[in-house]
Each structure stands twice: as C-alpha cells, then as structure tokens.
Amino acid sequence: MSALTLWMVAAAILLLAGGILLWQNAQLHQQQDATSAFVDHQIRNMSQLHTMSADDAETDAVSMPRVESNIWRKFCLRAGIVPTPLFYMMLIIPGLIFTVIAAIFGGVLSVICTIALYVTLCYFRLWLKAMRRHQKMVHQLPAFLDTMVRLTIVGNSLESAFQATVLTTEEPLREMLDRSNRLVQAGMDLEHALLQKARVFRVVEMELIAAVIGVALRFGGRADTVLERMAAFMRDREHAQNELVALSAETRLSAWILGLLPIGLGFFMIIFNNNMFVTMMEDPIGKNMLFIAALLEVIGAYSLYRLAKSV
Image (cartoon, rainbow, N blue to C red; front, side, top):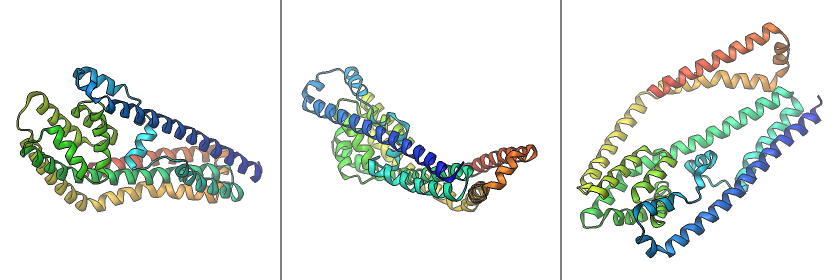
C-alpha cells in the first residue's frame, strides 16, 4: 500500500469523524434553542406554575429537553468547553496533520498509533481541565455556604438566600448554580435542581447540600446551623486532603511515570520504526511476545493506577 493511499484513507477517516462531530454540534444547538424557548415560556407563565402542585411542576421540569444527556456533552460541560465548530476544527486539524506525516514517512501501524496517541493526549488534556474545575468548585463551596447562611440568619428563606448567593458566586461554581437556578425558575424544586446538576458536574458535596435543603424545606429545622457546620467540615477536609496530596506526591508521580512510560515508548517505537513490529507480527513467536507484553502492560498500568488512587 502506497503512502498516497494511506494518506487518503487517514484523511477520509478524520474528515468523517469531523463530519459526525459537526452534526452532533448542530443537534446540540438545536436542543439548546428548544431548551431556552421552553425556559422563557415557563418564566413568562410563572404565575400559572405557582398554582400547580409540586409533583406536576417536577414532572414538567424533568420533561424538558436534556442538553446534557450525551456523555461527550457532559464531559465538555465539566471541562468548561463549548463544543463549537471552531473547537472541533482546532481539535481535528492537528491530528490530521500528524496523521498525514505518519502516513508519508511511516506505515499503517504508524498511522494507527499516531491517531491513538493524539486522541489519548487530547482526552488527557480535557480530563485534566475538568479535574481542575472540579477542585475549584469544591474549594468555592464553603464560601458559598457561608454567604447563604448569613442571608438565612437575617430572615431570608432558603430559596431567596440561594438565588441571592448565586449572584455573588464566581466561576466555575457560578455555572452550575445558574443552571440549577434556571431549573428552579422553570418550576423544579430547589432540592431536585441542585441534585440533578450535581450529578451532571459530579460534585458529591453539592448532593449532600441538596439533601440538607430538601429536608429543611419539607420538615423545617435549623438548616443554617447544618450548612454552617458543613462549610467548616469541607474546609477541614480540603486542608487534610492537601496535606495528603503533598505527602503522597512522590508515590503518585512514580506510579504515573512507571505506568505511562512503557506505553509512550511503545508508541514512539511503532511510529518511527514500525517495520520491526510488522516483522514480529509475521512471526508466531514475535506475535505471542507482543501480545504477552501488551497484557502485562495493561495489568501493570492498572495496578499502578490503583496504587495511585489508594493514596
């Protein structure tokens, strides 16, 4: 197979992937427009919503078009990225360039490993961005609870205190709270709105806050005292977690290096010298050696990952 044929095949695959992503993006914008229209209609008819029962309001809010129903959209939402056509172009064009270079100077294995390595690096970059946003959200929660408690003590209800506190909260926590507030304005209970968005953003602490608010709204009680103690507990937990991260930094870094270094070296060797692996794949003994090495690498990487997670 010539280099030109490989180049055309790689370009066709990447263009097909780009077309699928653009089609998904068009559907996303269509669903966003439908959701915005629905929310605007619900806000304009808020007086009618107040006469509805709690169950009917919850049913109407849940029946809204769910923009975050797709796994990829949820992942982009947690990373703080709007999947626009420009974003997809900036994501696909470098991969297309690297694939063409691999097709010209290498072989089929070079093309496959280049695509796999580029996709892995892109996913790792977005995952790291999502993790940093999650950590910042958790760091902002105690200050959010303190402000909400102060507004509750002076006589505001939990709903009013929540809506007022949202206006003073900074990003990225502001985004999750704004989405929850829009659901509340559309007729959903505050507890269910916070719970739904906490699951989308994977903030377990917000699920606990939603449970406390739900109990306070249904049965009453000193919710301000509970929220104040939760804020203090979150600060203590964050301080202890930072100490643990500092103490286990060497172990976790060693696990990452030992787990990723063999994979990176394997991809590097395949991309720049795939003839050796083609020869090994044609030999039964070489093929068995490659399969055993891949299996041992998977087992070792998983063991090191569990080791890093345990500390």
